[in-house]
Image (cartoon, rainbow, N blue to C red; front, side):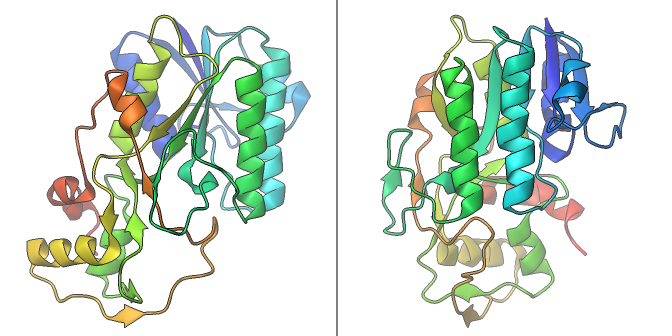
Amino acid sequence: MKLLLIGHGYLGQAIAHQFRAHQWQVTPVSLSGDHGSLACDVADPHAVASLPPADFIIHCAASGRGGAEAYQRVYVDGCRHLITTFPGTPLLFTSSSSVYAQTDGSTVTETSPTTPDQATGRLLLQAEQLTLAAGGIVTRLSGIYGPGRSAILRKLFTATASIEEDGHRILNQIHRDDAARAILHLATQRPLPSGQIYNVSDSTPLTQLACYTQLCQLFALPLPPRGPRDLLRKRGWTHKQVSNQKLRHSGWQPHYPSLLAAAPDIAPSILP
């Protein structure tokens, strides 16, 4: 089986590893062409037309920390050009749980309302709609962490963390490798779950206070101070519990049910 992998960064490289381990032939694609990938700007239809055909396409490219214009180009235009260029080839688009704008602490499933108040979230929804209309699969990923990457641990270890107000805001996370395994799981289902949305999140949403309290106990560190809400978050300030029940019922289980379970393994790669 041949995989065309759009995006070869932190998550994309883990996806490539998982698929190759299961005997897939992977063609990675990135804007820069780094790390052995093909260089291609998916916002350019002529560049997309030059890509090789495949049995399955995954779009997990990053926006390069850009704003709405970058989201339009990479996600909306990128999905449209892939669908147009490779009609009939299944597409899996990695979206974000930030499309859920709930602030009441409620549990959100794939059928919950999606009304993001940020332009970036609305553009992700447009890319999702294109993918679903073409019979593709959408995965909504929670905050990705893993080896060398965890904003929570980095802030804790550098004493720059703060607990927002009373610490009740819920954190939804997913280990990079568990996300890659979930994507492989969905791509190899038969029949394919065409036109379906799946939340990709671990099994233990934690309040910010509970998360930092338990991490501080684990690493013998003082609890971070209290501070105001971070209302400048790129994808908006939300407070919800992302349910992974649909994905688990399909046969996937996270190796790391929470950040707390993974923290001892990844801490050495994050310590300053």
